[in-house]
Image (cartoon, rainbow, N blue to C red; front, top):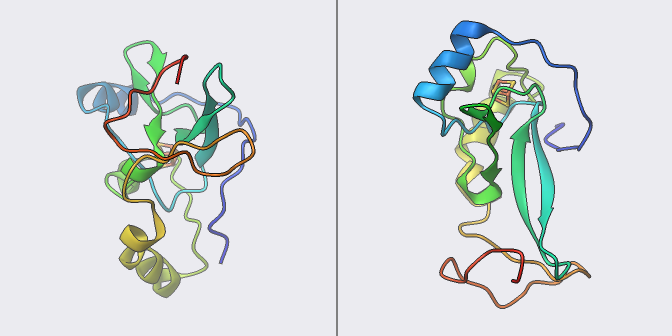
Length: 131
Ligand code: SF4
């Protein structure tokens, strides 16, 4: 299995129709696509949360690139994307991965300390530069 995420930039080809569809429904989240990449969003304190972005530049809110917190990633709508590239070895692997997705992803936002340990956190904790 190759279900890993990396932070490598990828050249972007824009598909105007697809861009319009994303703007209409910007909360696209694409688990099981090789271009759905995890990254750390850091606060000034050095703490961070895990988020995902589309390395193909397909997620936009208007002109701004949208990102998605890791626990909110899902498999919805990826099949509609012309750049979708499966992370699975075959259909069985894909089915198994998607079936286990809820177990694989965190159920809520985790805030990490700079050393990678968890901060005592909840969804209700305010996230911002001063966190
Ligand atoms: S399915 Fe498309 S929009 Fe989603 S991560 Fe992959 S390339 Fe990006």
